[in-house]
Amino acid sequence: MGAPLGTGQLDVGSGTVAAGLYNGVSRGINLRVVADKGSITPGYEYSTLVIRKDLADSGAYRSLRDLKGLKIATAALGAGSESSLNEALKKGGLRYEDVDVVYMGFPEMYAALSNNAIDGGVTNEPTLSMVINKGLAVRASDKVIYPGQQTAVVLYSEQFMQQKRPLAERFMVAYVHAVRDYNDALKEGKLAGPGADAIIDILTKSTAIKDPEVYRNMSAFAVDPDGGINLPTLNNDLSFFRSRGLVTDKTMTAATLVDESFAANAARKLGPYVRKP
Image (cartoon, rainbow, N blue to C red):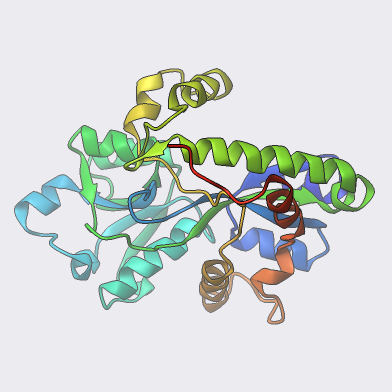
């Protein structure tokens, strides 16, 4: 999405904030992070580190301290999942160099865990629920590993923001309204609250996952009802990327990428969020 967003061929996109996004903006690709699209909070850890169940059952893995020497998968070099793994290692008193990191897509992690090709991986839904429900893996920690991590964001092209600002503002009002409907539908970590069936119906029609039970069973993601961005965790990720030499611009901060004015305007227009009973 980076190139068409940068040239204005695409108005809106979404995805993770990886090292490549910082490097692109540093080199003049004109896009900005404008709203939350997914984050981690207690009870809504839809992306996390899992470890093969046989390692946990045998006692070879008991806590994050036991990650040392294991082969762990993340999505890609410089991805947010790498920073999430780094947080797990820090909590275990380890360094990033203490594990053997390999890269693969989330669905591929299912097969790799099945045939013992990896010892664990930072994966997300629906792969997360699949590997746990099939008895292939367990969560690496019973506590949230990286609370607040900004795992996904909404992106605007600079041209959309500047040349079509009224439209960009209206889009954000609609988006924040939808995010609030989504929050209403959350209950105990699942899509199980008021309006959940309608939202699941939209998701099954609009995504490759056609089975509504998959959405009902998976861990839901958190998203701020005002569209607010978690800058501290973005800056933490950026510091990690810099430490590995993946981002070389020393002047950039997460705030360089972020324009919160659209979400703030939408929240003002919609008024304070009140969860439906």
